[in-house]
Length: 255
Image: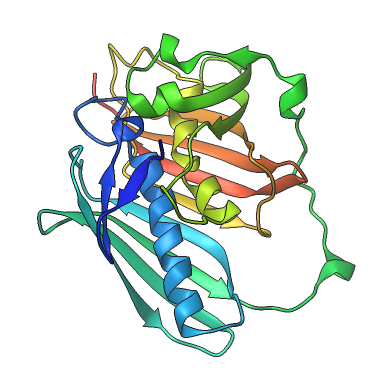
């Protein structure tokens, strides 16, 4: 069973695997982030054949969404020959739930100058398995395989991969599948017990060096709480080939 099933040209129904962690009657936002990348890529490929790559995925989370059918839409905000800004949106009952703005670009082959000083981490085969259902409820969390090496509350190396496909009966890119895992990082090394403190994220922004490879998504993650109700989860992203980019989430804290 996938996280979503298509019900129309731009409508999708969540399955039980998309159930949320803060509230099991709502969708976990993580699969929706992957779904938006999928519909954005479909729109791109219908309009052009050069396969522009996303360098930034910037999501704003407008509110919660029930376990019910959602509608997607895509529009080009800034067209261009080699660079464009595209927005995808997910809505329920006429209310926008999530928007994604992605910068797409095509820069050619830069293999000769590729490199980074972002530090690598131990691969998933060297990190012990961890059961996230010991902290979180919900169908999505139960569907994710996690490996974690925790340094302290709010500080850990985490690897995660989905046990289910993102969308039933359709080919989905590795990028869309990876995007569908990015939101897990906020809950994989909690700084405080979520039964005592709530810390949902209002957004998520990923900056990418290249297309991801493999099933595992790695996070060298740090969770920080400020003194005035704001927090930040930030991470260097990894995949089977090494550092992939960065991701950050704004948290709203409630005791």
